[in-house]
Structure formats: structure tokens, C-alpha cells
Image (cartoon, rainbow, N blue to C red; front, top):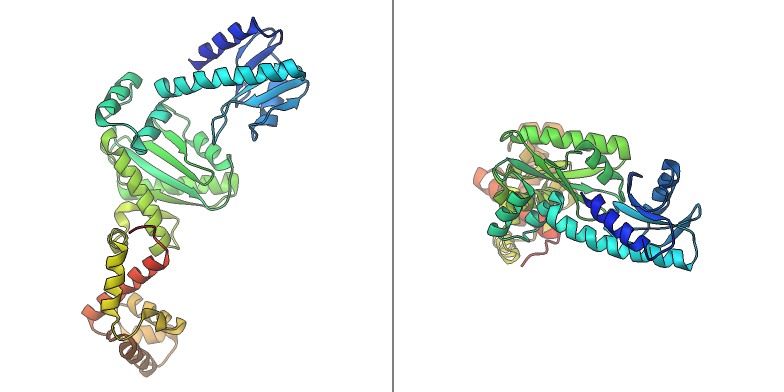
Length: 361
């Protein structure tokens, strides 16, 4: 346990500094101390005071600071007194404890291990060796759930998800930054895409209900073993990126349901531009006004049915035919013909993709 390592630091430094000091976790539990342990109320006040700051602070006659662990601080150091010796002691203990924590995370922390896997920081041999040391099951199916918070949430959403999945032996919550969180969810078996979406919906409902924040979730396919986790992480990222372009109205995006959008996303930018030039030889797609675009989308929604489209648009059939003729004159594509309609639909998606400013070559 890391508390034993912290206690060793406190015991040794207690011989140097004539102060009462200790280390507590973010829940107010004192893990190591010398002298008399402060009351629960005092420790809770100290934790709350310093929870959103890495600076040295003073509270209730104590000098306090967090152990730097961005973006989430799990431990604090407290020292009785606010004089120069107290400040020096607090900083010295924090540095020593931080070094121990980093070593402990590298050697024993399973969440840190999983983070290194999805970020591709481990080669296969090291991965399996480390998994054996940490007693991590390599053959259990897992899914990567990428949660993007749409407005700044600080620690709120991260805490909500950690509380939803508190078992750190099976489910791993990794905070990428203030807006992006990854959940590596252990599964009892290879579940369907619909079952994963049900899990995602539960997360969205809980996040919205407890934090009042809106989020979007990208889902990977199920990784059969630990070697596939890095690829699953990339799938969840792609689901998020592609979904932002082609499925704007959805807040749960599954990698295996991206359809042609996934194919377009994987095409080189130059190839997309050449495709649009080839398709629209008579005129650019940007020459189509908003009303025309609405007509086209409604025409596609109704499977190229002129009568049903005109009814839903509240226009005469001849008016719709006139608009389709206008589109043909501008682009050279007759949307009443199935093969040309397909080309036009793909071209619209490619155009939308390019407008999203993808950072690819």
C-alpha cells in the first residue's frame, strides 16, 4: 500500500522538522502522520480548501498543498503552523511524497498501466510482463468508452464516472484533460453494440443528472484481449471525430455504425478534393442555396420519391421537378437516377468532411 511508503517518509522527515504534519487522500483519510492526527472535520476542511489549487495555502493554522497529479489531485500534505519552517516542511514533504507516488504508480497502479496501453507506450513483451506483475487478466473482453464533455467541467464529470465505476481492479477511468475522459470497461462477455450503447446512455443520463453537463460518447468495438485495447481506443476516437461531422444530432457514436462516414474519414484530403472536382465539373457544390440543399436532403430521406418529397415540402410536384432540373443544370447530376444520386450523396458527405477542417494530409 502507498500509505506505508508515505508513512516511511513522514517518520524520517519527522526527525528533521519539529512540526506535526501528515499526508491525506482526497476523501479526507489520513494515510500517514506524526504526532497527533487532526480531527476528521479539520482534515476535510483542509482537503476542500486545496482541492482546486496546486499552490501553497493556509487554513485553520495549517500549511497545505496538493501532490501534483494533474488533472486530478489524490493526496494533500498538511503541516501545523504557517511560519517559514512550516512552509519549507510542507514543500519538502510534497516533493518526497510525489517521487514515491510516481514510483508507486509506475509499479503498482493498474489505471496508469491501462493508460500506457491505450497511449501505445508499451511494447507487447513489456505489456504482458507488466500485466502478470499487476495480476491483470489479459484475455477479458473490454470496451473503450470515450466521453467528451461539451462545456468545462473541472473534476465534476470525472468524479461522477469514478463513482459509477468504483472497482479499480476491473474498470479504469482515465482523464485525458478537462474535457475528455476515457473509461475502459471490463465486460463479462462479448456484448452487442446495442448493449454498449445502453451502458453509454446510462453514463450520459447520470452525468447530466448529477453534474448538469452535456456530453458526447464515442464507443469502440469490443477488444477480445488486452493487446487490442490500443486499437479500441483509436476506434472510440474515430467514432467521436466522424460523428462530429456526419452525425451531429447524436450523442452516442458507435465505431461499427459509422457507415460510409468512416470510409470517407480514412481518405486522404487530396483525394477528396480531386473527387469533388471530378463530380462537379459544371459547377461547385457551394453554388447551391439553402433551399436547394433542403430539397436534396428531403429527396434522399424519401428514397428519391418525387410525390412524397413534394408532399413533405408542401410544394407542387412540378415545383420539385423544376428544382431537380435546376440542380442538374448546376451540377450535371440528375438526382432522379439512382447511380447519380449515390454519387451526389457521397459528394455532399465529402464536402461536409472537408469543411470540418480535418488535420490530415
